[in-house]
Amino acid sequence: MLKAEIKIRYDTLKIDCSFSVPAGTGAALMGSSGSGKSSILSVVSGFYQAHHSEIYFQGQRLDALEPAERPLTILFQDHNLFSHLNVWKNIAIGLSPNLKLSAKQHRLVEESLDWVGLSGMQGRKPGTLSGGQQQRVALARCLARDKPLLLLDEPFAGLDEKRQQEMRDLINRLMQEKNLTLLLATHQAEDARQLCDQVIEVEASI
Image (cartoon, rainbow, N blue to C red; front, side, top):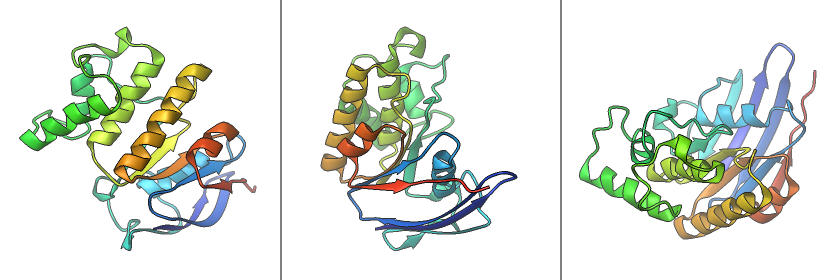
C-alpha cells in the first residue's frame, strides 16, 4: 500500500495532503491548473524535496531514498524523448544512461515495445512518429524499468480523443496484467473514471 503524508511549500503555494492507495489500484489527483498535482508527483518521485513528507510503498519508506532508488517510474506530460535517438535507444536510456544493457535489460526493452504495440519501430526517430506513438514510446520506457508504482502527469495532454482512449485502454490493461499501482495527475474526469478507484482533490492555499 502506498501511504503518503506530504507537505509542500513554495513562495506562493502551500499544499498539505495525506492519502493512501491500495496496491494494484489507481488514484487520481485532480484540481485546477497550478493547484499542485504535478508537485505532489515530484515529491513522491523524489525530484522535489518537501519541508516534511512521509512516503511509504509496500512497507518501505521512500522519502529517505534518492529518486533512482525508489520503486517507481514517472511519465511526464511532455514525455521527454530525445529527438536524436531512435525508439529503441529512447527506451533503453531509461535503464542505462550509457546505453550499455545487460541481456535481461535487452529483453525488457523488447518486451516493453511489444506491450505498447510498437514492435518493428525500434529504428524510428521521434520526429517520424505521431503524438500518440511518442506517448507510447515514453510509456514503454517507464514499463522497461519494471517498477510497481507508476506516476503519470497529464499523460494524454495534446492527444485527440481517439488516442486518449487508446492510451487509457493500454494503461488499464498494463495495470491489470502487471499489477501496477497508479498515481495519476489529471484534470480530465474521464481519466479518473476509467483508470482510478479514488479521486483526491488538490487545492492550493496561499
